[in-house]
Image (cartoon, rainbow, N blue to C red; front, top):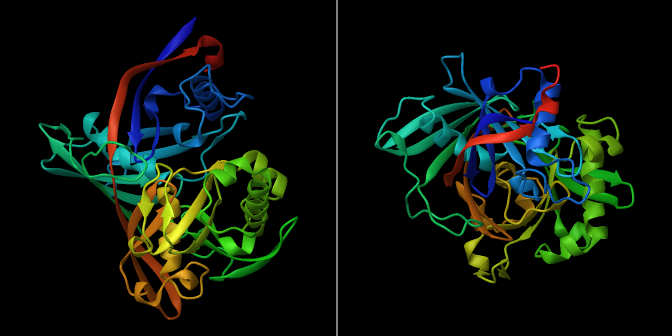
Amino acid sequence: MQKKIPAVYMRGGTSKGLFFHAGDLPSRSDIRDAILLAAYGSPDPNRRQIDGVGGAVSTASKVAIISLSDSPDYDVVYNFGQVSIDRPIIDFKGNCGNISSAVGPFAVDEGLVPPVEPFTRVRIHQKNTDKLIIAEVPVKNGRFDEDGDYTIAGVPSPGAKIVLRFDDPGGALTGKLFPTGNVKDTLDVPDVGTIELTVIDAANPVILVQAAALGLSGLEIDEVDNDASIRQRLENVRCAVSVEIGLTETMEEATLRSQAVPKIAFITAARTYQTLDDNTVNETDVDLIGRMMSMGTLHKSYAVSGAVSTVGAAMIPGTVAHDLLKPEAHQKEMLSIGHPGGIIDVGAVIEKTNGTYHYREAVLGRTARRLMEGSVLVPEKYFKDD
């Protein structure tokens, strides 16, 4: 026999997953996680998630758990989980910026916030990072109005623009904008060698490495997924940094139990290149080019939280990202990152006081859509002891 759990399947940005009310899931985290893994069809050693709703890629294996906030400073609480495809793990350490864009629409449609036309401002307490995200949600007739002409790279259909404001995103997981204390570090990485990198924690901890330091052009797309040696070098760097900043005790633990954070991207200066769908991105259209990894594979666009960190780093002198910008880009308030799917634009407010940089706010636009609503079915055996 199976049990039904109320759920909504939503796309947020270039990701999608199940959205739950916290009260519809068990309070015990071990039982909750077992139920969610079963719902997604994880772990699946063949990485297909054939026995669940998971999409067999990291961007479609995500979960959001939403509740009303007890604090007058927020409207809702949002807990994000990255569901592993081939391992019995749900990583609740970091956030997904793309899934964040669907939280406001979910809150409006589920009656968690009073609808206000034409835009409802939803104050989201991002539980994983203990940060505030403000979503400006288009509303019509008391519901989220998904219709519009705003487009984002990686999503074929246009939609209504949801403005996301990441308030004070620095130190989301580690407590410091630069977890190592430096804007640039030199690290000796096993099987990679000595490499320069920047570790920045804004919305999520992200490692930035210049592509040339890894023997790459920075324009690679298919080459990453087709070459295990590239993926292994990137994973080695990611795991070494994870240990360096104290997220895990060993590199092995980082691979086995902390796949989602820290994130890693390799970047290069603006150049003309072809996207996944064979469109041309001109050098003049972007300020930086980035390729981000997601759970061991290449992200086919660019993680929103990764973009927040990358743009923040690019605006701060001395980082490996800032070093790649053209001089005229140094004074811009919004930067454009070229990625495999196209371009993502992020506005950032960076302030310097007494020699210390403070990331005040990051702003960007996303779209979202409610895809399905009803119940997800999970075998009764996973509810034991609940």
